[in-house]
Image (cartoon, rainbow, N blue to C red; front, side):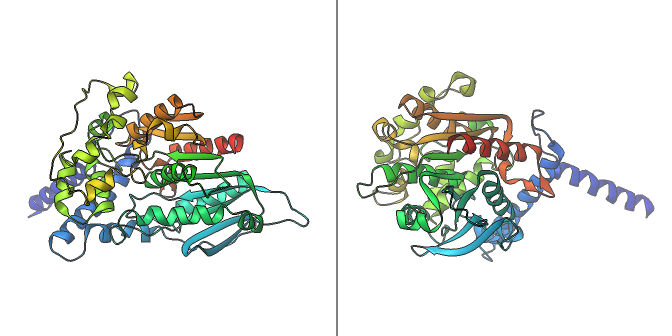
Length: 408
């Protein structure tokens, strides 16, 4: 009986070690902490799959536990005044420096858009609350964090439209005066899906004939920028990497556009392009826009075009929309864009999206700072709160804010 108990204990230990262990590259610091963090994410993902299979709750509904688990109540402190407001009907949390007597200096402003694959996340999560306070304190800035509506309940273009309405509302002289903001020192920034929204808003504002005030800079943190080719070298290299494996990123894209599972399966095999979207593949030809060091040993092949990939009015039309895939605009639409900061991570399926966009912006004459982290992984900037606090996350935050100090 005792031997059976020992055998069961050893078996449980071996299974646990097998489940926790992930072949994480040696270049990544704090590997075991990342393994344990990713173990939680994978466990929740498996639970979400099982729940959806049984018809209990959809996948993203279960994954929202991450958002709820990190939820905080944004409140004012000794240095930062926090208010929850509506900008043109969209929820925002506004962080402002507490005014000192007689202080009338015009300040910078950062409009920040959270990540989460358009399906998860909230500005009321601890890491985003912490980041906003740090920007207020280090930049003496106003920070507007946007609580846009999420897919799959609200498919594209609803999240984008929420963000665009907030930016348009804020970029009015009367509104800026209320918050003591300098009209010439306003940034839009976001991470992951938030970086997608920030890039799209920057482009669309430039094309809006009624828009008088413009953004000074755009800061895109490991942004997702295109849905046409989901087989770039970074998608292949990092398909099983924490925290964003290829399957999850493809699921985010699919849920952003539609609840039709057939489109998800088409995206998984990279056969989701229609003739309409295929005409834009030249803008994501990574053999032309990726430096050789990022291409590695991978060979470019044009994604398959399927006549039935969603139909003319289906999700294939959405993936061809530059408001969803900002990398798809022609060079002429890039030339007037504001100065850009693009952060990419080596161990991230989205690495090549950011690298290609930085390349195209530079070729169009836009001033670009491309900061690449050779040991970075997706989402690292948000891992700054115990117990998932990573040194690289703090380093990224410091460098990002330092860039804003010098360029905004």
